[in-house]
Image (cartoon, rainbow, N blue to C red):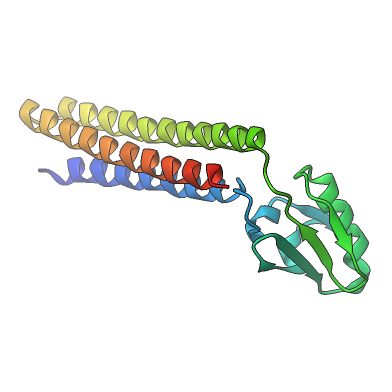
Amino acid sequence: MTEEVQFELDSAKESMQKSIDRLDNELTKIRAGKANPSMLSSVKLDYYGALTPLSQVANVSTPDAKTLTVQPWEKGMLDPISKAIIDSNLGLNPQNNGDIIIISIPALTEERRRDLSKQAKAVGEDAKVGIRSARKSANDGIKALKEEGLPEDAQKDAETKVQDLTNSFVARVDAIISAKEKDIMTV
């Protein structure tokens, strides 16, 4: 196998792995009824005139499975943090006790669990689209190599390897989504 073909395969594998990493990142934002500091990762607030992620102005922790606590580094930020959490449309209700913000995570209803499950499937489909796009890019690169003199049997062999790689990554996405759905649907 030539270096160019190996480069196309490595490039496809790297792109497919990025799709898996992005999937993992997106799935952490879908809550399954358990408190997780990453649930607030999308919250941004005005901090001295700049839109700043919550994690850069406060410490977010989980004392138990149903509670999040947000301890700002400056007491004056308690109200802006509460407002940003409410405005983020996450369905969370922060309670300000003067020192920290306490957020109780409500139990999920059956309907909400189904919605979250559908959301997880949609994120999984996006990951599969990214994987298929990497496959197409690799196959186009291999076809271009054929134009430059790559033997036809080497081209077919390389395309088979790309397809095998694609199948393995799609199977990983299916396994990840299945595990997340099971986690969401578990009461």
